[in-house]
Length: 294
Image 1 (cartoon, one colour):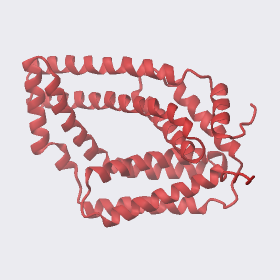
Image 2 (cartoon, one colour):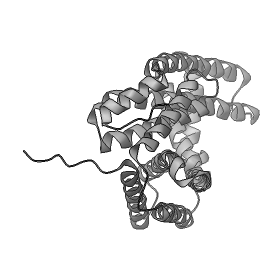
Image 3 (cartoon, one colour):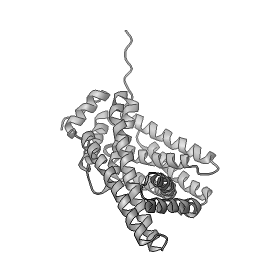
Image 4 (cartoon, helix red, strand yellow):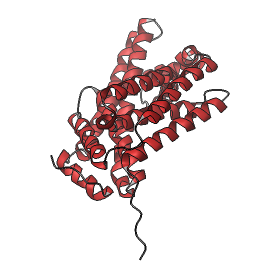
């Protein structure tokens, strides 16, 4: 009977995976003539995944390299945030206008969508692509170099799993938090870390990942509604929206946001119901990883 090949150590697989992700993005950015929304989305998503992976390296690399990597990747994502927000807002305005009941609210949303399409913040916020690409390439090259500098002989799987459990605990503590940005951040960290573990060790984790991804999307929609609400505040102060329209718009957007938030809270309580010690044991069984007793 053939002997089963043991899986690669998680830290080594994490390093290899992260370097491959940086290399793929560098290749795509160099080949691109313009920044499509797909490339924008993939680049922002990759920076979030890399930040979550660097967190797993905290017990190995130490705080300073992880903090530097986080700042570098956060800066790269921030370059793309205005374009992403404008694109999402434009699509959201159209969708909300189609779903709105009242003619006043629908008319204001449609007018906002027209303004966003013609002269919204997307065009004004978009820098020249060559300059933007150079900044992104420098950040990704620095990130790849930082991964290469990590030692070849890395720690046992247990330290990686310990960090996964710590970050699960952080996400769990924020369920229902008023700070949607922080709540979503830790859900996304947990999702990225579990996606890596699923790819390396266990497809069975997919049953947990799909609803976590859904929670991340719902929290993102809550945030986008808050951004949109703020944009209408600005339009009201600029005289582009009347006071009556603004009141109804704010009430409409606030109702949508509260409804979404209730869904997020229900789903969050279900997904993070397990205590961290129990979650650690589940990881041990699902991915064949020794978890140190605490």
